[in-house]
Amino acid sequence: MDSLSVAYPALATVAAYLLGSLSFAVIVSHVMGLNDPRTYGSKNPGATNVLRSGSKKAAVVTLLLDAAKGWLPVALVQWYGKPYGLEAGTMALVGLGAFLGHLYPVFFRFEGGKGVATALGVLMGVHWALGLATLLTWILIAFFFRYSSLAALVASVFAPLYYVFGDGLAWYMDGALLFSISLMSLLLIYRHAENIGRLARGTESRLGKKKT
Image 1 (cartoon, rainbow, N blue to C red):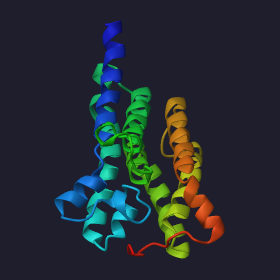
Image 2: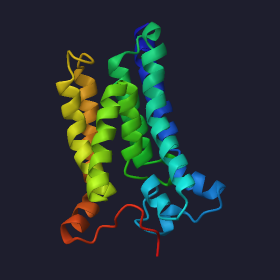
Image 3: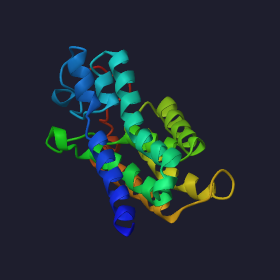
């Protein structure tokens, strides 16, 4: 039984990583006959860069699928994991696994996106209110400043704070989940290092700008 208690979380985490490794920006662009998002704009395989192709539909589909692959593993553990001993600790592992899969996808030479949508999906899986608060933060910053990267940076800072402040109100905080959310936030900031430089120089592309 002890071996199974170790095997189930490990298998769930590997499955989440493999799901996260599906780079939907590349897949959706290929299916819809668009250029590979890794060849234009920021060259980032994510929804924001797909939007620069001029196809809002492709960008929306990419966004939803990237978020879904973060949400699904966490939600499945939350719904069905308890009989197998899979609880908050495993939710933290599968959420982080899906997120790392997006950043370093095994199917795409470990060259992935920045993980904003996938991280949001993970937060939605943990609790809808946590995901919604983070999403609203992104929307407000993006609406007023028109920078997707700035919105992502601000939202990533607030996500673990929302989780802490929601303890005892909307959920009961778990240490493993707090660590996972905080690590995702740090990795998001790290993956936006070039964007931070462009923001400081005033050369960052604004939302809705098409590829040149």
